[in-house]
Length: 153
Image 1 (spheres, rainbow, N blue to C red):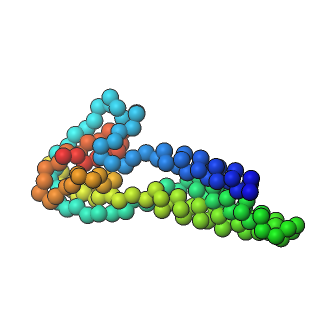
Image 2 (image 1 turned 135 degrees about the vertical axis):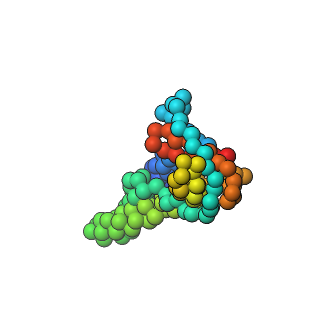
Image 3 (image 1 turned 135 degrees about the horizontal axis):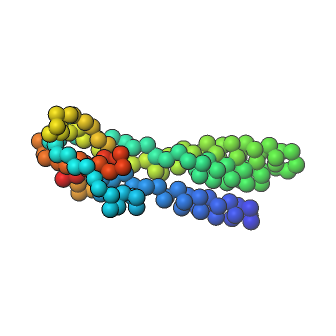
């Protein structure tokens, strides 16, 4: 029982660290971007469509899953059977943890195609924000800082 409690605490800590992923919305800036001059271009929205932004794929999910699976598997049987069950549990847990991490961190995004005033047509993908929508024909600003662009009203 003590092994399972330790595994649960480890999983919780790893998932909490995984929640520290940066935001992909148009209204969140990194610390490095603050007070940095931005290039601003104007344009007109041509089209908008909803997209999925895949979740993170770090070592956190598989490691936590493997730890939980290994501990859980080790409680099955005894002797060599316990070792085999721990290995199988760790492998299955690692795969399940990777899938869980990606699924939990997946977000709804929006692809905004903009006809820029300079003659270029570009598509921008950013995380969708509740209450913020873009419509064809709408005038927008494209803000670029440190090589990353966002579309804002």
